[in-house]
Image (cartoon, rainbow, N blue to C red; front, side):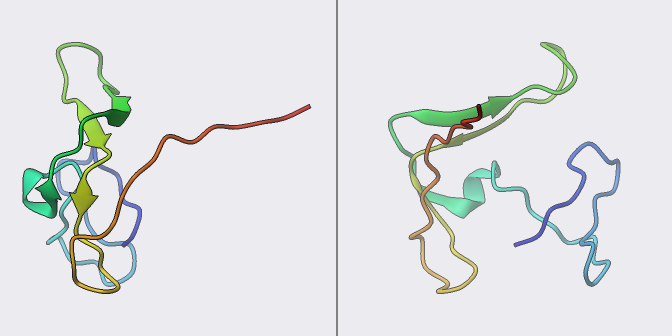
Length: 78
C-alpha cells in the first residue's frame, strides 16, 4: 500500500514506478460493501471525480484477504 497522486493522468507507485496502481475506491478491492461511507472526497468539485470509502471489507495487501476495514477518524488539538 502506497500513497500516489490520484489526480495524475498516469498515477504511478512512488517505490517501483509501476503504473499498475489501483485506488482503494475501485470496487474490485471491496468484497463486502459496508453500510456507511467513512470518507468522501471530490477534489475537483461536483463535476469531477468523487473518491469514497465505506466501512466494508477491503483487500488487505499484508494477508491477501478481504479483512481491511476503514473507520472514521478525527483530529484533536489544543
